[in-house]
Image (tube, rainbow, N blue to C red; front, side, top):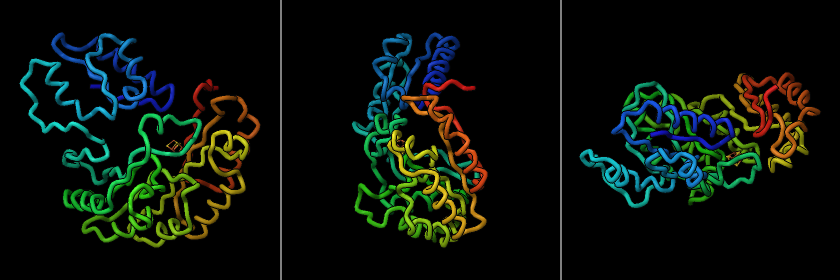
Length: 298
Ligand code: SF4
C-alpha cells in the first residue's frame, strides 16, 4: 500500500517511482494499493497510467478500504470494523507510541486560496476536531509515555473556525495546558494572516507551549505574495518577527521560503537577496527554501 503525496511535482514523481519499484518487487499473489493525496486528486490518471495497480483509493473513500481489500484478496477478511464513511480526521486507533513525542492532528483541510498549493483541492474544506476530543487524545498519549505533543493541521492557526470554538487555537492551548503528564506542546505551521496578538501571548505565556514559531512566510516580496494570494511583505514579516522577539527574546523561529512562482518561476531572482537579507537580519532559527513547482534547481 503506497501512501502518496501530491503537494509538489517532485512528490508526485517520487510516489510514482515507489509504486513502480514495488510493482517490480512484489510477490505474484500480492496486491498493489495506492492511497493518499495523489490518489485523491489524480485517481483516474493513476488508474489509466498504472494499470498494474489493483486499487486506487482517494482520501474521501477510505471508508471503503477494508471492504475493497477483502474483495481484492483471497485472504481471510481482515475483520476490522467497516465504516461506510470515514474522515481521516477521526480515524483513531493509532499504534502505541514508542517515541517521547507524537503528532496530533487537530484539523483537516484548508480554505485559503494560495495559488501554489494543492492542499485545498485534495483535502477539502477545514474540519476541526472538538477540543474535548483533542484533550482526551493528548491525555491518552501522555499516559502512554509521550512528553511532547505536536499539534498539526494544514492551517493550524485557523483551528476552530468551522466549529463552535470561538476561542480558536489560543483557547485550545489553554485547555490543553494542564493535561497530566504532558510537558510540552509544539505548534507546526502558522499562517501569518492567522497569527493574532492573542495567539502570540498564549504561546509565550503558556508554559507548556514550546517557544517555537513555525511561520509560514513563503516569500518577502509583497507583489509576489499577492500573486500567491498570501499576505505580507518584508516590512510586515519583520514586524511579526520583531513582535515575537519582543515577547520572547529566546524564541526559536523557523520558516520556509519558496523560490519563484508557478506562473513566472524566475521572477523571484530580483527579490531573492531580500529574502536572504531578511533571514540574516531577523535571524530565524532555521529556514527551508525550495524551488516553486516548475522551477529548475540551479
Ligand atoms: S494556507 Fe497552507 S495549506 Fe492552505 S492553501 Fe495556503 S499553503 Fe496550502
